[in-house]
Image 1 (tube, rainbow, N blue to C red):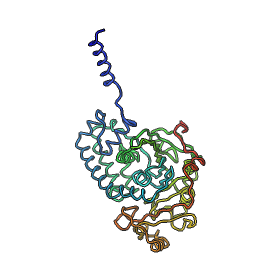
Image 2 (image 1 turned 60 degrees about the vertical axis):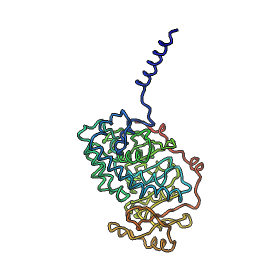
Image 3 (image 1 turned 90 degrees about the vertical axis):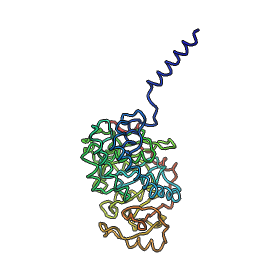
Image 4 (image 1 turned 60 degrees about the horizontal axis):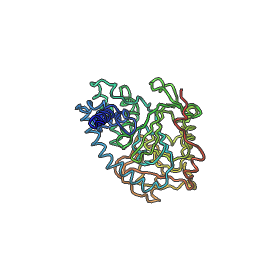
Length: 390
């Protein structure tokens, strides 16, 4: 047998496999390429976005986001993670983050091990980003608008609703999904899948069309993003556009969906003090009933609504009067509680009072909490293969 001939045939076969097989990439290659590009990070070699990554507009975009991220991580996120490690010893498999907008950053920093994140706000999901469908000349303006939408969270730790409406709409990169992509990429996450979903009145999850018309058609429409981190465990993020007022939750199915997810923990930050009013009492009551732990600022659930015999409350930081826009939401009893309890120090900003020494966190933990096994026995979380396809 001719050995050189065998070697040549083997070599041809080997290099054919190398040349014509699909490049390996954890997760969905296109989704992650777009997420990394929007985040100002390097894209995979050979990516369709590689030429765009050489443009001056991307270099400027990358420089801004990487600098801003470095500052945010050192002054905020790393400190939040340290606080979480020290104070949140037992967390539940689900996290409810009402009035969140696209703020995955703090949800992940406080509760990095949540299997399911349920986030909700008034902003529509918008489009799944695909930079290859944009003209090259339009990319700089889109990146500039994206940076504008991120400035408040980088500067103050929260989104300004009115500013978000201006920055997230009327462009090619619209809605909350591009922002979520940026945060997932910078948090070291790999996106596995993205699906548009909506809820019916019974809280049943259905797949929705990826159109702007579909997003306006339903009371509660959103996206389901599955992703993984360094540990390779799959986590799920639901973001819903929905009305969280009592009138809105009557028929939206949102709270019924949350109940099906099962008991969990809650994060409340910069929530416009909406939970102080009776028009949002349904959400407030749901969180008190279904949460094992609540991490919040003073814009969350008022102190008077916690049954002291049911909750162990720990104060952190300093409680000062709300900013002028919400001055009427001052809580004298919360001030007295902080004075009496000698709160623990807080090394990061949180909520509207973002300046050093003025932020507070109220950590509320139920005296008796169900175990993870008990939670699963009560209600099984919704699964993608159980979603009704329309």
